[in-house]
Length: 134
Image (cartoon, one colour):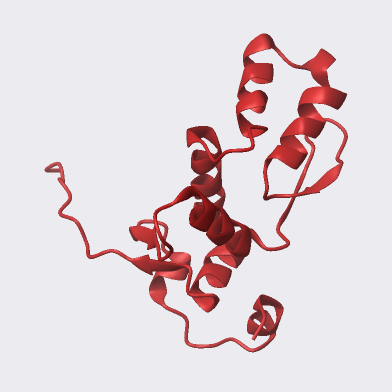
């Protein structure tokens, strides 16, 4: 079943698909190649748009849209922004790319649903959390 079909025929979904507070982990091996394949499967055909010109790009791999912004719109970027986009253009998975992925994953139900349908993530047992008294 594809993700598109799952939108047309709602199934019994786990609660964590719409709950950002659930702690999740990838089900793949803990090596860069396996993680990269898993992230690519989760992102699928998700798209993003350039905030300057509206150019459409695939969300993942992120170096495609980041390189567009870094090269086509360099005159609009601060030095810090150029450095940040350069990190997103690196061929090896790095911390900036990983953080970007998890932020998008937290916001996009479509990515979370794809991760569930393709068995790419699993919930982690609840960790104890510190609650401040009211």
